[in-house]
Length: 498
Ligand code: ADP
Image (cartoon, rainbow, N blue to C red; front, side, top):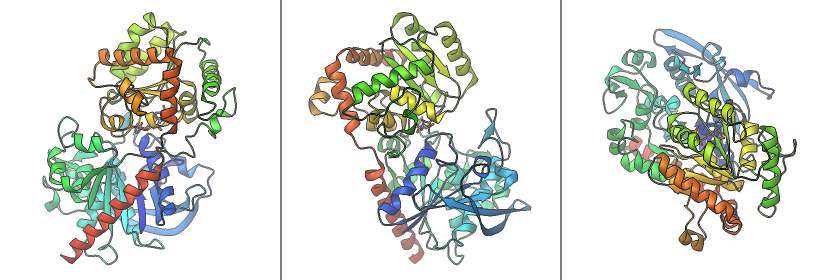
């Protein structure tokens, strides 16, 4: 099989969230399982100005966007040392910009045209690749029109009939909905603007189009796959998802253990940080905690250090975090380290807490991969009280780094973190702390439980060891994707024959 992974971001080229981690690592695993993979993404400014050995392919095309024809071309390089070819869709007016999707928190007004162009360019590219893909693996709304093009404009065209599609929903809250007249930009016949295909409450929806027309659909954890069949988690998409229920499944994301490994982490070799493994975790964590406290100007007290990394939005539970922090900074001997960017009100609140309590709170309002690695290594606890969480990656990185996760038991967090109790300790499955009701009281109770466990070094080290020894690499999940690709191909073949 040849799988073309289509995505709007991938590590190491560009990243705003977990989508980039997944799309930068899954394609590396596919050749290990005996199949061919390629990756395609936009040629953003980060790509054009990178030091990577990027070359022209000579492939050029003209894409109709409404009444205009827009030209584009294709650049290429490899995904690190994996041999997986990467193709970049170049269209500088659309993609040579400072940010990926928005500027100062406001979406670019031409996002619809940008990603219509991207999807259609991938359609043109697919049949010009050295080997035509058997499956196009679409990810999130930005690639949601690809299944729609295959079922409409490109249906019956030579070379396209056998291409199957899967759509992975990384977060159903991001849907790519645009006003109905943008249907004109797609070039797809208005007859498909109906509630079972591309229309969503009067708008054109990229995500719904993909859900309606992909051969198979998945989300990034089994629990989230169940949750999104009903409100509020479905974000309005419950009808189309229930309609496609037989083609929907959940596959937990893997983590890239080359990049996220405390034994080899390149960000732990300088500034007093240290690499460590399960044998040396106790001393390793001590050194890294001290280095982190130094780097973030926190006093070197031996009190539990709680780390948080993520987008500062309601989804990630920052309403609960800030509520708990407001009382805890005065009453509990813990330190808080927060790294993130997002809604201005959280920037303001967190900056105020840091200013008032510099002994206990350190906040970095930026995107820093290096600091993200160092927080995973230096913190004792990692907090993820998300309202909902399709999969979540940071709790998996935390497990590997011996940093005990404290999570709201939802979506992928429920599928990966087992609360520490006498029973789960006896079973050898306890790997963190979780709470069920999404409230600040429940979060505070879980944190008290975690802190009490911190004081009991034996139990702490048992839970730490269980987490560090679990395997959350792509080994299992990539196999599941292969099965999904195969089932999508079988479905496509059956519909061609029908
Ligand atoms: P989501 O995709 O919803 O943002 P995930 O937990 O799936 O959440 O993935 C988030 C990814 O983005 C993780 O790799 C995390 O470390 C990274 N990340 C988020 N915010 C920042 C930040 N401010 N600096 C560095 N990395 C970040």
